[in-house]
Image 1 (spheres, rainbow, N blue to C red):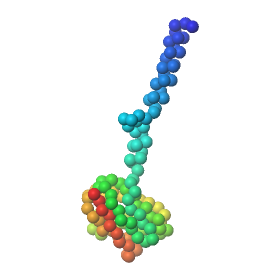
Image 2 (image 1 turned 135 degrees about the horizontal axis):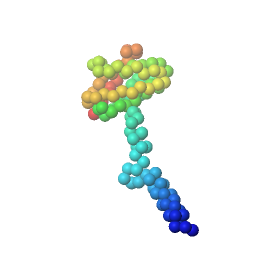
Image 3 (image 1 turned 180 degrees about the horizontal axis):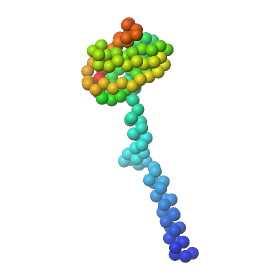
Image 4 (image 1 turned 45 degrees about the vertical axis):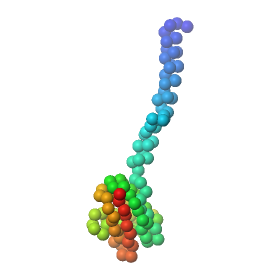
Length: 120
């Protein structure tokens, strides 16, 4: 085997050994693309079911999901006018509340629906 062929063979073997190591995760946060995708999704927050709001505690400035398990549209409307989100029946909608506090909410469509979102 010539010197050039030996060098090419050695380079190929070295490359095969390096590529899998570069693609695998390690204990120092490897595979961060998966983590980034998971953290960009809205966090679970508020559920609407049986024409009632679940209690919700969320983090200020973090987008969370409102899930409507009823078959009709509802709104999540802040009594103080800070936000008003329409959520279709069987659907969901994102919401982000920037300021910590306790928000009293209601549904504009169904006046008997009231609840609370606590923002830490």
